[in-house]
Every structure is written in C-alpha cells, then in structure tokens.
Length: 213
Length: 394
Image (cartoon, rainbow over all chains, first blue to last red; front, side, top):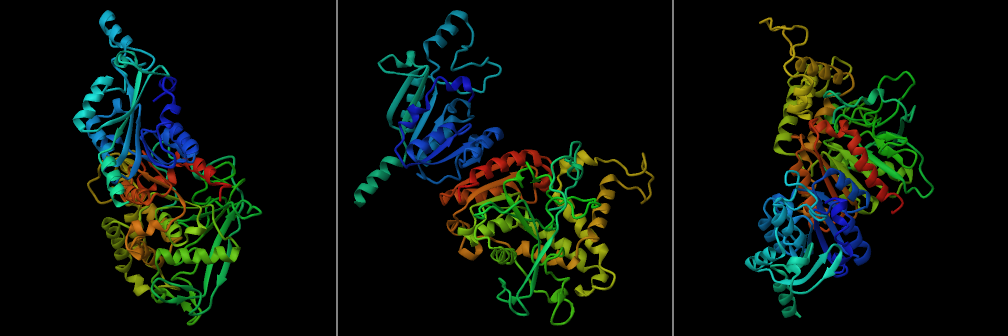
C-alpha cells in the first residue's frame, strides 16, 4: 500500500472498530502505522505480518512485533481463535487466493476486519462504460499492466462471499474518499469499504464461555 | 561461523573498511574457581579453575543499562572489533558491525564479548593446562554444552557487576547461546538477537560435525587428543575446516566466486595437478585455520552444538520460551542451508504462541550461512533500529 491509497482511508475508522486490550493480528501491515495506532490508542497486543523488507524495518523501528511472511502461504502456524481481531487492510485484492486467506482469517480471528477498494464505485463504472478503458482513480491509481491488484471486487461481491463462507457481517463502514457514507446506494458511492465479520469460532466461543459462567 | 570470507563480486571488505573504527583494544582476563570448584556443568560436574578472555568496547553508562553481550560462533573469539596492535593485519571478526556509528554503536552501547568455554583463544579449553597434572587437559577436559558456555558468561557478568544486559546477540552457535541466555536468565536479558541460528541442530548439521570430528580423529597425529607439545593433527583439522566451509557457503556464492575456474591453468592438463579455484580456496581456508585453532576444541565445541536442544530441559520449546521475558529479533537468510529459515520460523512461532514480543526477518542473501557475517549493511539497518527501541527502556 502506498501513500496515495492511504489518504483515502482513515486509520481512525478501523481503530474505532477494535475493543481495547484485545489481541490483534494485522496482515499486510505495511510500515506498521495502523498497528502502532492500535497499540497507542487501544492498548492492544498487536502483531504484524508483512512481506517487504523495508516495511519490516519500519515496523521494527517503531518497536512493533512483525513477522516477515507471505500471506499466500496461509496462516497454518497460527492457532484457531488465537487472536481477537485479524485485520486485512487494503490487502485482500493483492493476494493470490483470497478465499483461502478469508477462511484462514475466520479460523484464527474471533473477529475479522477486512477493507478493500470498492470496484463498483461509480467513477470506475463510468470510465469503463464511456472510455472503454480499465479504471484509474485515486484509490486505484495503477495501469492494468503494473497493478498489484489482482483480485478486485465490489462491495456486493464481497458480501456474497461472506454469505458463502458463513461469516456474518457485524459492522460496516463505507467511505467516499475518507468520509463515511451510508444509505442504500453504497455499492455505487463508496470508494472503499470495511467490514467486521464474525470469525468461525467467535460466536461459538462466546456461547461456550457464557455457558461456563 | 567463519571469519569473514569475501564472496561474490561485491563482498564486503571488512578488513580494509576505512573511517570509523574503534582502534586498539586490549583483551582482558578473569579467572575464577579452583580444582573441582567453579562452574556447575550440565554433565553434573563442578569444573574449575576457569579463565575467561574477554574484550569490551565503548563505555559502561552509570546505571549499567547499555550492555550488549555479543556471543561468538563456533570458530570466533573474544576479538569482535578493532586491532590488538597498530601492526595487526586483521580486525576483529565483526568489525563491520561494532564501532562508532555502526549497528552496535560504541558511542552509545557498552559491548562485551568473551571466548567460549572449551575454546582455544584465551578461555579455558582442552588445550589449557590442568593444574592437577601440570599437563594440558586434552580429552580429560569435561564434555561441555552451550548452556555451560552461558554459565561461564554469567559468572563473568556477575564479576563485572552487570545485573542485566540490554541485549544479547549472536549468530549460529552464538545464536544458540543467546537463546539459552533468554531462557535460562529471563530477568537478566532485556532483548535477544538471534541470527542464522536454531533451537536445535538438524540431523544434517550433526552429520557434518561428525565428518569434521572424524577427519580429526582419523589423523594419526591426533593420538587420542595427546598431541600438545608435538606435531598437531593439522591435516585432519584442515579437512574438518574444509567441510565446515562448504556448509557455510551456498551453491550460489560458490558459483559467483569460483565457478569452474582453474587455478593456474586455462585448460585441463589431464593430470592430478589441475586445481579448481574452489579447491585451492578450501585448501587455503583449511591451512589458515590450523594456525589459530585447536583440534580438540573443534571436537568439544562441535559436540556441544550437537547436544544443543533448547526445549529439552523444559519439556519442549513452547515451555522453554514460556519462561522468557525478553524482546526477540530473529533473522535468517534465504540461502542458509545449514541453519535453514524454517528452523528460525519454528522458534518464532513458538514465541508467538507464547504471546512474546518477537520480530522475524528472512533476508534474501546469497552467501549461505556466512551471510550473518557478510551481509552487514542490511543487518545494520534492522539491528540498529531494533536496538534503538530497546535502549533506555529497561
């Protein structure tokens, strides 16, 4: 993720979604800015996974715990329900097997937070419709030949996948640029979307704990 | 593991590195214990007296919170950086990393390194005189472990009045000691940096060590270890070193440096005088090693590495790491097949399962196991950043 992306989504919005003092795994954590903010503002116990050496170094210099790893290899070494939140911020569209990763995240995290650019944003549609060219916008600043985004989807596509995976949506933030928006035509108006999903073990664990009490 | 070997077209030139260096250093010694008394070894034996050779760089601050303990690898010694005399031709083995403005910045940190127990470069080992007999120990020297080395370092720190180190750092066998430090003395280690290392040696690693030991013990001059004062088993030791060197390099680094080049001929002579570049390099490394290393130390130290299994004492790696209270940085290298990355990852995942503060990076580097000695620029970036987050937060 580069600086151009970042100005379109505010970390504050994601930080607000996270319960204080929880365990957080941030996949594709970049330079660790979000994780750092979560640790400062929410006192979480956080850990990042990142593939780029320079980004790892940036995380290390912030004092963060970071693991150099490739998300395409999955999360097999991470225990089931071992984190309260698994975050995938602006990374879903660059992984090779998004469904595998989603399944893994839902296994490892009691809650899963996923954010991604909404391909159904109206400007994208217009560019394709009237110019007949692959959309290039602020959130999708690449040409077709140099984009790292190999699995773009729309807000609605993602909701379909969540249903198929049996992952209930607990919360949603849709933004246009950095401003939160609501309403029925979010699929058209949102540049980016962020969902909080119920992990596969989350609900069951809560129930289990409740029964114990 | 080895002293830096210049491999590849742009291999770092530590020895001639101009500019910032720490100048002349004087090794120091500390002796403790007496016969049958000194350090309690893993084997159950109490051993003494022990002399430890060590060097220090930089200044100890007032509250003694800036100590970095460097633990050396198999054939390393206490001489980490600088020169012993102005005429000295060789700088310390990690000179590129230790000095003013370097990764281990001597303007901020107080760096300490001692030669390991069982070694042959100033600390008591099989070549030292047994005060009971007046003769070198040879094979009567007790079998030692990585933890025994750490115990001797711990006794040295006690003597120096250092209660806690801000970091312990080591590569290869040094990494094994750094891990043992963090597990054995959680409250004395603020951070541990583990480079190209493992929580236990692979069968492959043990196999190569066995070949090395066999090369030595097959040399008639070895004479069951009783060669002191006589001609040493130089051939055996040099073959052991040649095997070792192969394991410290990689296919890629050997290809880059030597390829299939012949030493003094352009074409094959179809006789056995032909020598490939790689052969003469190994001969040279083997020969050079004999001048500075003791064959019996090779046997004892390699055995200590074979025995090493961090989790064993505590009933598994997870249980061992559960004791730790340090911040960890683990670094592995893509081309290191002697201490492969998957072993570093095993440690890291175990630390993660324990909820410990750990960062892991796998540097893409062609120089094999020796990368930790050769790839100094990128390591400097990572290590300096890491130390910065530890410094002053004890």
